[in-house]
Length: 244
Length: 244
DNA sequence: CGTAGGTTTGACTGATCTCAAGTTTGGTGG
DNA sequence: CCACCAAACTTGAGATCAGTCAAACCTACG
Image 1: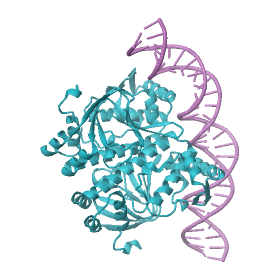
Image 2: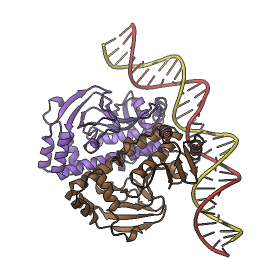
Image 3: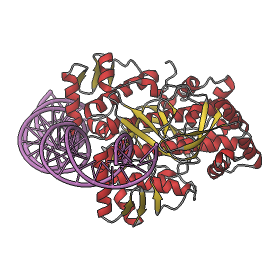
């Protein structure tokens, strides 16, 4: 179990190294960060909008999402996250959480004091660059989501979300993009794509009937990637993935 | 005219200073940055998706937007910008432009080599912090746009966009939020809100009839801010504005 | 004046939502 | 091991918000 692992930061260091080469010095500085492990259930809040977090949260295992809510109570998920992602890097620099973060599956997280991360960042330019770049890639993904939700039709939106999940999963080293277990419910897909669960269900069936995906419960296969990419209007350039 | 101004960076320095206090040393380093002024017409591209920009672009006068396009050719504007904004800060750290940037009015811009900005950033931690924070606020605004476009109805979306414009204009020191000239066409509002120009037009009329705004051509007055805030579901917290 | 871009209006269409009722599934306790 | 339950998924029918198409109107500018 990761809880008993001496170096929960290995996947983080690998990720940062992909964003900007880290020398041994920088890598050990990350490894030396104080942290606090926590095992949490599904649907557990890690950050709530309006709080002033003093720690940043690294996801070690499981899946999470960030979301905002309208006054009417409608929820919009603004991103999904997987092992290796830092969930609230912005709290290094911004006082108040402008959105909430919660798990969507059982998960393990490591909490690190923001001030200690800031210290490591100022001592190691490569870490500064890697983390800044990570937050810029985050922003690029948000822009793609604005496009997805603003200008694509329902079937394309859902397909795009699936493509992004598969691609990010692969570049995080979590497995092949051809076949995977989706961690989220159709309601969560709906909240991420700006649709209703009922319509998401219909679009998934449509994608199946078209033969671009094969589905069994939450197990998905992309039957035909080139066609899926085209159905989804998916071009992974916005992920700025270092050749994985 | 700014073109003949010796210090086109004053507004930038003021903005950065609001994000993180700059000492005189840091301020002079910004002032010493090499730059190239350009006067451009409305609807002029500053960056095109797919390019590898080597300069960053500071908007000195006028208005601009960033946008992405679907395969079908539908345009989604992902942000609006005004004097003092850096339009493509992400190119400090990311190689390829994942979206396009264009003016929406006549404008003056200053181009600065990314490598020189990077040098100033590594020499001055306060500038590093200020710029990083600026890009995190950008990201927060994108998240709000995902919510706006994904989960709010048409009238609320349009109203929200107007509120954001007014609020950002004020905190950039460009004038009161009570009354202003909107620089964008209704088609541009449509592309920013994920609607059609026809429907934007109807929603503007609806807002007028409700008495929350008064309009004369592109001149807008917010007749009743408390009510407008509520109609727009607008809470400026996501702008993370230093008390302006 | 003539023209082009921007705005406005009306009539009709259609994608997506809503509501409501089933069905399946995975987990829990008897 | 089975029965039950809640959550998730599925399906259908009807309603609605926003889109489409088309035309007219303004107005700034050459």
